Length: 404
Ligand SMILES: Cc1cc2nc3c(=O)[nH]c(=O)nc-3n(C[C@H](O)[C@H](O)[C@H](O)COP(=O)(O)OP(=O)(O)OC[C@H]3O[C@@H](n4cnc5c(N)ncnc54)[C@H](O)[C@@H]3O)c2cc1C
Image (cartoon, rainbow, N blue to C red):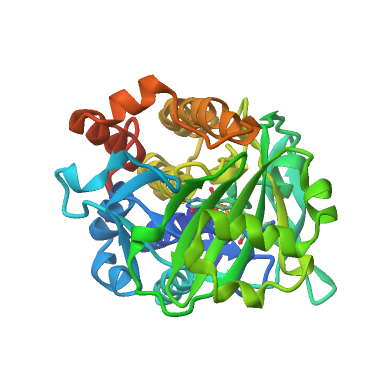
């Protein structure tokens, strides 16, 4: 195992943990990455990589290979129904080498990245390693205890990074309080095999019906679908039976007709309680939270992976020098929060407006939902579509890799 007085222990091999591991290990900083699962095939994973993340992957020398894993490119985010289609964001208008959102199954994306990380001599990855506790020495966090194959193991580190996602155990153990907000919706999340469909990102987006909404993600050979419901209404929907659910889905997406034969039972669906939030303080002596562990992102806009990647880059940019000199201080960790908190708050505010003003109104409406007049009016302007695309793709203060 890699060790040293500047050893970093990263908990969680999601986008934040893996990118941070690579950036630090490339500078010769010893990194141990602990991942609770044995692989990257997860139920609740997003697939969308925006232009600013593709820029970062290009700076790391990975963009070309990663784009080979991409099976669809979305050029526009649109809201549509049986009678209208409105473009909210047009990525093709952006002046960037990547004027689209790349759809890449996260399993393939993470497998590619960990394979690259495994080539680095100062990187060590342990799968099936569930972090259980933090080790504290004289008021400073100095490592973790993890469980693998029923046995407890220790990793000692000068810095522990909690990149363990929305339900972060590290955050809980460190008693860093998450201020939660509960958007007014839940999502029924399920997959269907694709039948007779071309591989384009055009079908990806949000569709409105009468008091219903469906988010569709084109995942190469299958659809990832999110049927959005008002919080607390899942039980009623279930009681109405799977046949009624098929009918609701067909009204929103007739092209699912042949695929729906594979949705036989509610056990094929998971219910995702949508939560968003932020911790007040992202760090403690010896510990930093990044990605969803520091700020739980709503699925709206498909930007969570991007914020996780940008957190990782900001962390590497700010901490590489102190880690190399072997003297990491609390003020360095504070610098990471200072850098990333404003972009996160800004995008969460935009997500909150969309959740309340559009999604919630659509679900409460007893008739075919129409976007507010002002939204429809503004969405007609190319400049607005461009600004929205920029905000989703780049947000405030996009990061660039300083130590490629
Ligand atoms: C249903 C749903 C759909 C979404 N769709 C999109 C989308 O389309 N696009 C998008 O950009 N974002 C989407 N998001 C958000 C996105 O998935 C997250 O914002 C992003 O994955 C956060 O990355 P992360 O690296 O911080 O954490 P995660 O990706 O959550 O990774 C955390 C890792 O830590 C591991 N872990 C957890 N606990 C421990 C432990 N105790 N010990 C060791 N390891 C542990 C987990 O197994 C996991 O691999 C979606 C979220 C949900 C819930």
